[in-house]
Amino acid sequence: MPSRAFARKVRIVPSLLAADLAHLKDQIAQVEAGGADWLHVDVMDGVFVPNLTFGAKVIETCRSLTKLPLDVHLMVVEPEKYFETFAKAGASVMTIHVETAPHLHRQLAHIKELGCAAGAAVNPGTSLDTVREVAIDLDLLLIMSVNPGFGGQAFIPESLDKIRRARALLDAVGSSAALEVDGGIGRDTANACWRAGADTFVAGNAVFSAKDAAAEVRVLRALCAESV
Ligand code: DX5
Ligand code: ZN
Image (cartoon, rainbow, N blue to C red; front, side, top):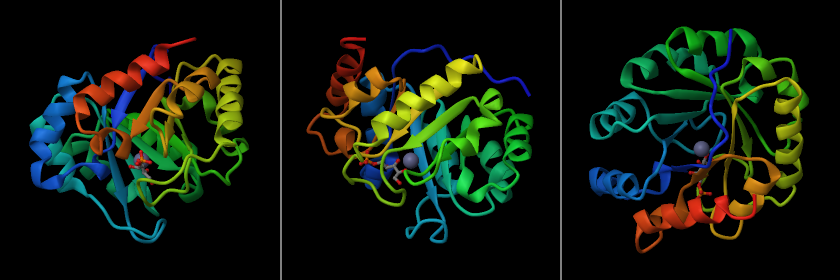
């Protein structure tokens, strides 16, 4: 189950959870104009997390509106129920939570068989030990820097040390998986996460609450690239 080679470069990934859905097309066009690398689609089931969001229809709609890779974050129990539908709908990356994935190795393989990149996410309270055995199989490792469920929460500072340890873990096994951080990413936190070893930055409110979403994507990218 070889993992994909994602080069270590800054990827800015606006989260549509914070977008104005009445103007989804425009919102996507704006971040695309700003140079967004991927789009982040948060799928929540009201069971694993106390909120409900998007499903296949929204993924399909996004797919029809942009050529950018769709980074689908599954905050759901029994995520494998959705793999086929979401792959068909146009997901590029599917990331599942280790807390809901008792057969993580098999589930990651399943995602890859469907032609998608496979990611594993860990909650703030979850140890990196839960991904150690599959580190070599990962296309993406997602460090949650808030407890998942809602946008606009404050970045948990301890996440920085976890990002450092995650970078060391990926390097130790020679993995070129993307190291993604999600939650509370903005002007105050992006650069520290980059210096700690993250390369893929999900940003919801920071981008879509900004006056100019395109400009904000550029600002975040510039902040990350500083002082490597
Ligand atoms: C939270 C979601 C995030 C959310 C981030 O559970 O997984 O992707 O959209 O939002 P911000 O960037 O506003 O913290
Ligand atoms: Zn997310």
